[in-house]
Length: 323
Image 1: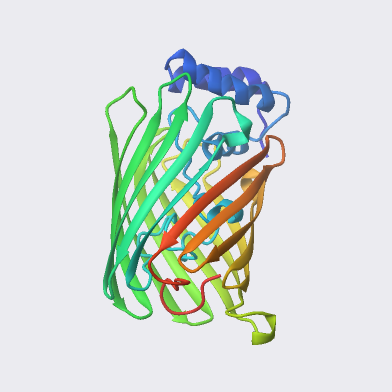
Image 2: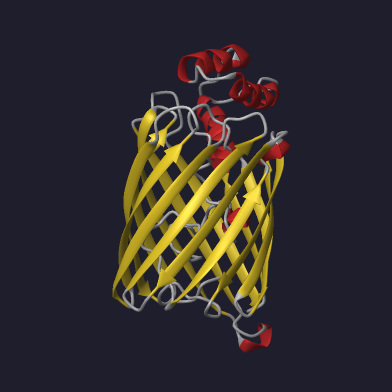
């Protein structure tokens, strides 16, 4: 595995070449580089840290899902539809109804930097629509935001397909636009399969990503609690158009244990970025809350909080059992 011979020098040189932005972003990257430069890193690891933290040069907004239970699973389960909102797969659809959610965090405790996301959805028997707004606020400015609109069509009880369009701005350059397509299949109540292709502005201008996910799970005996269930997920994302020497793939693994319809415990692990997560979901009726801690091996912890509401009870995305 190749290592950077002089991490601080390489970090600074990449910043001057890619960024060329105002002092506020320099401040953010210096906060992170002060930690990174103390250790020898693989090039792909350095890049992954920047992108997942939400303070990378040209990718201010984090790509890894963090809303709801995804704050605890480090994004795992978002391709196979563990939750109606916040995932990467536009083919996710729930039971007929509507709802909304809000989540937020301060990445690694960086001063004056906050990331938040607000989403809403409306689903019918055969189709669904959703809208999301993700925002990075910096007390020193400028801010960054992304709007995402997606639609999904359920062709059968076990298959759905969808797409999304997005627009994002960092407060300085002209808005960038992206889009993607996804499919979600439930060949058996025990398992789900998901595939997503998307293209959006990124660190190198534009990057195409392919996501593949599979999960498995089942209900637990009634003695464990009402509507208790477990589920595990493995997902892989591959980036196209990435310069040589940088990581092009990332694995994520997730585990969900619903102890009761009002309580669940979730965990996730992303080995390429050395990040683990653990959190809980709690709720009553259509209301629910989320609290999670993500822990990076070198950069420390990030606390993610969220709330949600929906017009129907515990939502199953399609067939099978959600965690």
